[in-house]
Image (cartoon, rainbow, N blue to C red; front, side):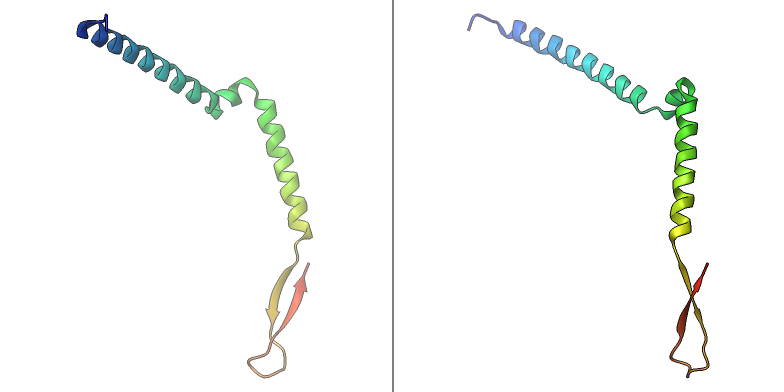
Length: 86
């Protein structure tokens, strides 16, 4: 081994600093990629279109569902029938 312990420690220190800088840069990139406020400022039309599309989709799904309620019948207490509510 031609390297001394001082050179090895220096190499480890510089590598550690480089990795720390890379990690900080990666953290900043992840934060900017997941910041919905920044994306909304850049392209508000996309968010508005998505909200409109989602609302329309939910309204269509809501119409197709049938809701049932239990209506008491003249039968004895334990038996009830279901009636469809539009």
